[in-house]
Length: 378
Image (tube, rainbow, N blue to C red; front, top):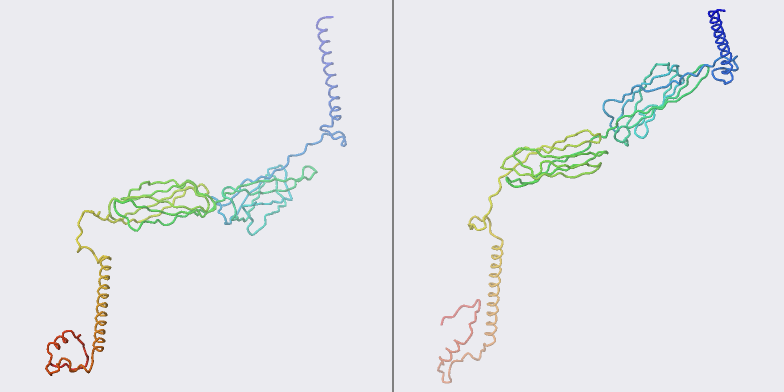
């Protein structure tokens, strides 16, 4: 036998062995799958079971609430668009909107029903809402819940989807400034103070408060002051010491910059007109003062005048009273010494007048003043 025939027999044997192995493996693999129960349905003649399809998901693709932020106590329309991202349609859908402790439904319901939503399709819903007065400042959440059913093959299943969106809430800016207060008189070259009150009436804090004074013709000791943060309900006062170089009227401006509860930069300005007078000339204590330049009479002069008048009145009264008493006493003494038997007194027994005695008695006798009696010539 030649070498060619031996090679042909060997090749045929190898082919036969490989064929037998392939046939054996073909018979063994289906049996193993059937025994494991993977991918076959024993009650359906051993056919392969189809895997379940993916669960359809509902997501919110867009929502609106207006421009900027919503203020406390205001109404707004919340609009949102939701889409079925699955491969099968969903049906019997119920959508619920929950505003939590910051939002409430304004004149409507928070629950909405949809009969079906095909795969890949979307719907839009608008909900009237209101920001509660107790709402906190900043981004606040709103919960939206989707509950729906879908059919997978011959089986009906249910699923839910909870989605949260955020809406920024702003407190109204109620940081207020009072009117600038100036002293009654502002003199040139003298330091004066201007002040201004402030109060934060809002529910949120304001931060980085900074105040400054601006104006031509005046120089402030500290032109810019940093106040810091002002809590809700807090108040205070800002004061600036300044000096005007010359007399006249000057336009100044008090400016306050701060960040409101939303973090936005705010600026408030208060214009003020300052009237400056010439400073009074200094008085030299060594300079003699002309009495004629004095206006009015000093108080101590009036006191001396009044005291002198009272003293004069007292003296006059005392003198008059004493004279009257003396005259009254003289009249009483004269009545007491008078006797009718003494009508011949002053005549001696011999009928000769005693002129010496009469003269002496006339000198010593008191003077009596008798009213309504005519005088007698001597």
